[in-house]
Image 1 (cartoon, rainbow, N blue to C red):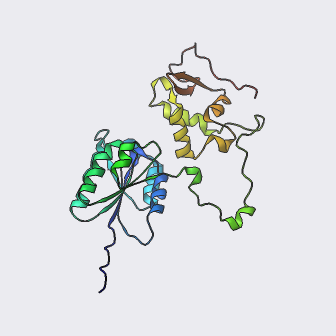
Image 2: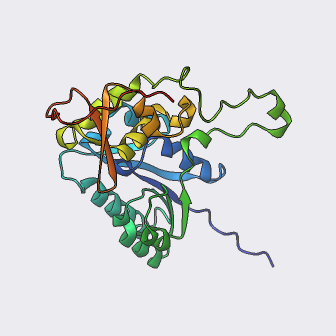
Length: 261
């Protein structure tokens, strides 16, 4: 007697664009076997996210429907994503969901979809909280962007150029020109021009694919120390950085200057 053939999964890929980066689209699509059909590709975001050219280009390149939540509040995109996911499941149009997010607010959605028979795969960053990881069927951590490209086959490894040293001598290394532009871009949303060091690192990685070690620095702090027009401060364990000529810059703050290394 022939065994019944299992129905192919009806897949929906739903992206929380406000809580991830455009490069995540390619990462998640690599997780899905090519022979499986993706019925829905949808990205959700508010004004500040969906107005970015890099998001528009990424969604278009990977054939995602951009669902722009115009001026509807901070959580408008999250609510729209959750409602669409539940509707797709209840209507029988999808039964397998790939949620690209690291936001704990989607924990309840994961539980609800699973109790109704859905499979939920969350693809998120390392910062994704344990509650979200436990609520979904499976959790995949996003591959660091430096490792997104496929590894060089072993047969051709000898022909690959030698890797750059982790730390270059001070005489030859130089902070990237976009460093100041990145601080200026983020400072518009920070108090008195101060930008969290962690946020700056994520921005450089996501927008420019720049990490300190690729520039010859052991850390982002070391790279900033080589830039005479930036200053840092650490308060309660949180390090922030800003341009020396930023508005509201008090005179008693000492700027970091290049030092001999």
